[in-house]
Length: 108
Ligand SMILES: [Zn+2]
Image 1 (cartoon, rainbow, N blue to C red):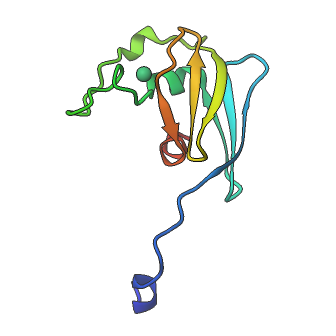
Image 2: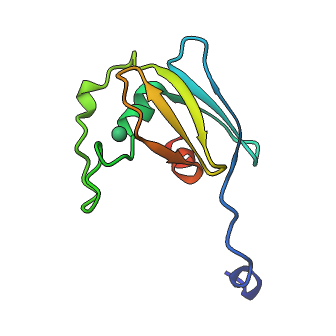
């Protein structure tokens, strides 16, 4: 790493430009401000839910049983949370997970 690399500002966090649920409601298409396009399935998003019901708040240990989330998991609703995250209503009525942009980007 050169001297100039070490004084560059930290890399800007990616921001989603568009977020769209597929017509079958089983996947989400995300377009990022750097041009990256990702498709995330409802199953993957539901399994990765970061809320306190799915992941133990203090230990970070996952409580959710992935095997109970089938590939038919739907995304019934997507809503923005401020300008930094989105939240879903899943096919199993779960709706407490908040997915911020950097977490969403990690998933896909
Ligand atoms: Zn959850």
